[in-house]
Amino acid sequence: MKQSRILEACIVAAAIVVFGLLLKAAVDNFTNKDRRVTVKGLSEIEVPADQVTWSITTAETGNDLQQVYANSSAVIKKIRKFLTSNGIKNEEISVGTPVVTDNETDRWNADRIPFRFKIKTVLSVNSGNVDKVRELISRQGELLQQGIAIINDGYMNPVSYSFVSFQEMKPKMMEEAIANAQKTANQFASTSGSKLGKIIAADQGQFSINSKDENNPEIKKLRVVTTITYQLKN
Image (cartoon, rainbow, N blue to C red):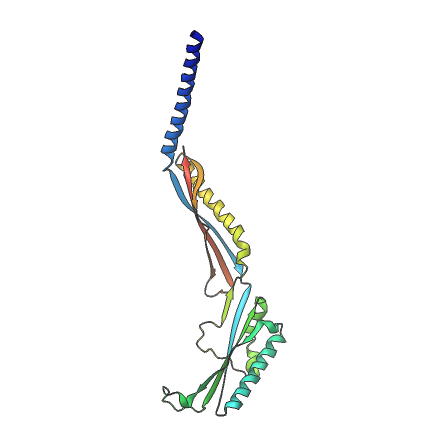
């Protein structure tokens, strides 16, 4: 009988201890559940562009449409020869559909035009050999010496650069951005007398590619920003 009461007392005591521990854990959880910190992590790097597009626009005028078209075709052949003989591959060159303007049918043009027809053609170079294309852009004078005029045609910039290998760099940059976010969160937790807990929420990061500046469009600035929310513990 006495032993039974002792056993019951031990069971009750154990139950009280377990209940106390559970209650403490619940209180701690309730206390800490709203304690969190949201930080941003940044990864940024500058890289040379690995793709370039160069738009070359020419225009031929005259009163004989067939002759104007023949002249336009001859000019395009000369430009293509200039490019291919200097290291540009045929598959990197594309020629747009010629645009024909008949000035006699242009009712909006009140001025007298010396030539009736105008044929405008855009030849584009799209290449991963950025350095080679940049070299040829600086040598456009050689085309002028052949009597080939390259017109602006309203293009703000006939040359554009891009970085197409971005997908290969995303994992490493994302890893760096997360590490920087965690470093910031740890500093905040340390300052506030807390410890960093588990991640409550995180995004996959905002990625952007921009030119370094207007004078260096061939240099690209890659940027990844991620936002992570951590739990704070006592």
